[in-house]
Amino acid sequence: MGKDCGKHGDDDFRQVCRRFITVLVVLAILVGIIALIVYLVLRPTHPRFYLQDATLRQLDLSNSSSTAGGVLSTTIQVTVASRNPNDRVGVYYDRLDVYASYKYQQITVAASLPPVYQGHGDVDVWSPVLAGPSVPFAPYLADAISQDCQAGYLILQVKIDGRVRWKVGSWISGHYHLFVTCPAFLVTAGGNGSPGASGFRFQTTTYCHVEV
Image 1 (cartoon, helix red, strand yellow):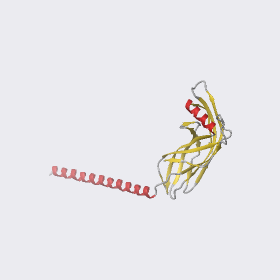
Image 2 (tube, rainbow, N blue to C red):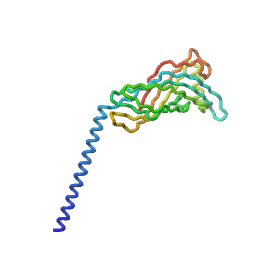
Image 3 (cartoon, rainbow, N blue to C red):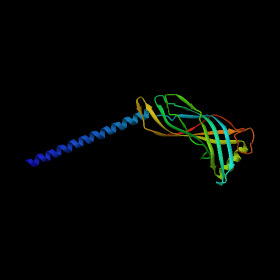
Image 4 (cartoon, rainbow, N blue to C red):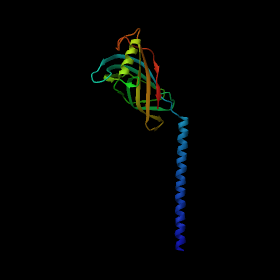
């Protein structure tokens, strides 16, 4: 009799555990379905970034005794605009670091932009000054930038590395990595013959490639 009671007690306990696990699985599935529906309905569109201006203040390439190539000193002020195209989703820009590069080599120190919240359809504009004093330059890059300047054009990349969060109502997502690349087309009326900021002008507003 005692053994039967013990056996029945174990069976009841197992049934309670199965029911509890079943409830947890069902709840997890429901939460996943709800999250998927919310994502599909309110799927956030990437913020739109535009490079509106780029003013080259310094571009000096000199020989270096410590490197095989040269040393590049650059100062450029850029104006970048961002627009949130979403109707129901806000964007928190928690970190935005901006820098310039030439043929995939970073040529300025990253400038940090202040954190900002961007509401539905809002537009934000930043105009940081990017500076890169005495950056070591590989020989093939030194030759390439000299040739570009002599031809009267220069293509730089303005890049933004950041962290963003989405806001829907009172719900705020976790952090997502933001990476933006904006081509800066700088031209002169004629060839300069050597690197230098004089004579280079920003050609046109460009649309930036955005990855989140």
